[in-house]
Image (cartoon, rainbow, N blue to C red; front, side, top):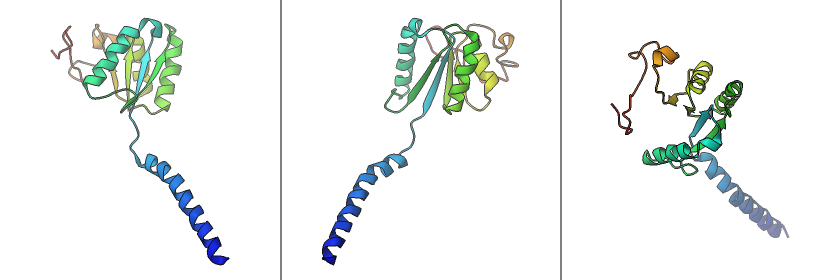
Length: 150
């Protein structure tokens, strides 16, 4: 009878190990980087830009859901919501914030974090808007209208 109990214990142990193995394997895999997408605009008006954003990521080797996650936050043109949304993205420890929909989203993100990189586009003067002390001090890549570096 003692040998029979040991066999049950062994089978239980083996079954428990087999069930825990996939969990341990998942825990050892590197976590997927998360992009925080912060916009002062409305998602209803952003479908074309989001498609272009995802296409640009894909060209750089990042596919949403496969090797990068994106957390979307839209303020629906309510400036006071930007701070709440940006704070949420920062708390989620995103790898980078893509700030869109005008300068307000960039300014709020810049005000709230100095450790998370912020990527944005602007047609205005970075110094006048308050996004850099000088163009020499800012890490800036100017792009031509066709999307190539100037």
